[in-house]
Length: 294
Image (tube, rainbow, N blue to C red; front, top):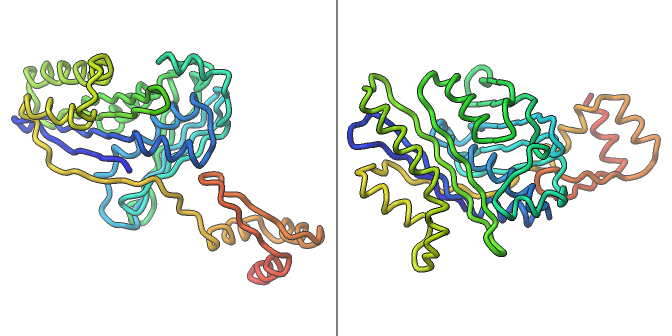
């Protein structure tokens, strides 16, 4: 599970979101059997999506993040849904040749690339989903999301997403800060101080080698020092929302010709979910029944 905090400063001039997503990254790794480099970069996108939970109004709402990159990792997708679940997909998840770089706390520009499209799809139960997009401008995922939300929300925004391999474990953390309307120059100055501070706290925590306090508790103690109030705490779990019905709908979307080709081949088919690896077996008889619906 992941813990998400929504906070506000003592002057009500800026809001904060903090995500502690260690378990989300580990769940992704367990399901996908992916490389360290894949887990770290996918973890950043999952963490970003978790930070957006406050946009939800209903349990049926969903927010999808898609990065169509020119890097070796290819397509990255994260889906936040049902107000408390998240899942993710990375096209090329076994690029282990980058693992030694990422284990040292560094990254490779070739993994993500520096061009492509970042897409956000927000379905909040309105007439049509909101779709926003911008160009990928950097191999740094945090910079790409900062660029998107600064333009989209038209306010000063700071985003930082960090996933670190620590021995046999992961520590995954992210924050999103936004200045609220009618802020002053003093607020802007304090905003910059907070942003720079929180970007270094994970390294500070790891350097302190503190075993008797979790990183979550470490950050909460800092919030108290600066009178940053926690308004809400949210728990999010890694869980795929695939189902027999969704697989059938996908097959129906292939159309009559594709389904007829499957039937003529005469063999039952097996479809694996890209997000969790679960396998769905469909008999020729079942395919025929689907074809009759078209």
